[in-house]
Length: 330
Image (cartoon, rainbow, N blue to C red):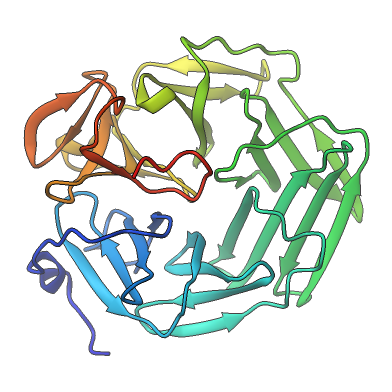
């Protein structure tokens, strides 16, 4: 495949396709000065094509693949983490078409739930972590590290924590995740001893209605969460205060722009039009343009129209991409 410049991408005509798999922000060519923002990637089952969508414009690039029906689990540093079936997972660098197979996921650890995929740029080591709680209250933690090329399995009994279906993050050496009511779970190991804590165990978050989705985002020393009400009826952004061990609501992201989904990324925006905004994997069906939420207006917008939206309720104009049961409106 020939190399494609940033100008080539900008000149590709926008297309609106039948999206099927999860759209995940991909920091492709992460060290390139020309590519400052992540792209969303999705897979068309019917045509066997990856779509790479630039959220800051209306351009899509298509790439053929030999994959039959990959599930897009996550992305990191220009790599995709893909699943074929319940136990087979592998890494793909799509633009160079490099594949790295991981060992089969151990039996009884193939539950669809939260995970995190990380690559250390300085050592080129990669990690995959999956964590969930069983109905009997056992926390199960599965980790693969290229350093030892084997799965590590841990379990802790007596845990009451139902993690959300979206992304986990690695922060200060620990794996962090949200449960479905906003509690923050923290998993780490000291030697070979697993440690589990819920720093804000007693905190009761108050929202206008039931939480529809939540996302974790880390940026330097900040840990943020995005909570979304039913059909996007409200959006709240919180930052975790490590001194008080509590979530605190914030009214502005400053010059940050967030891209949330199975992978969630925060970027310092150079353009004013991108600052203080949150991009979701939600598209207008009419023109394929992505929808973003502005903390300045408190409404949803797209760059293709001056219209804005209070939510997605009661409309068939939007395509919401997710593999979360009950979340896909189309």
